[in-house]
Image (cartoon, rainbow, N blue to C red; front, side, top):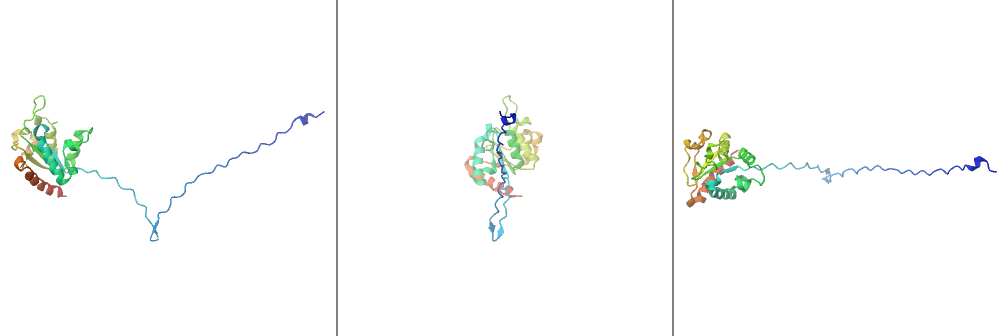
Length: 206
């Protein structure tokens, strides 16, 4: 008869299953190639591009002489590049806040061209209120902003006379003292060239 101790067979020892975890260390960055025996300096990242702002701002009423304003824009864009000339329909991106875009352009322009036609002074809103009488009129705001910033303001007359002080609000009184230039159908390109020559002098100033 086997003893009670013989009934108990000690279990075989379990084999150890240990996995060695290897720590991955990234390879050191390669040294820059040597130039004439000296390590090549690491180039700094390129700086962000500086925004380009237009130097010439064209102000006009769409209900007045939009065709002349856009012909003037085409001439100036050919002469100074499109980036140098601001006009609302061609410069403001779809979906942009156009009031903010106008204000931003006015902060950086050097010349404002106020294109004036026969209907510029008496243009009215749908309620019959004269637009120049409203402080929120965009054309009025554009000219007021340029005058306040000492921007060169040039009235550009298209089949129209220069407005008088009685035609304008008090905030635009200085506008009537600005020397105007006429754009005539018979000499349109010659008149644009004269205007462009003067603009060249203004934008070239530091």
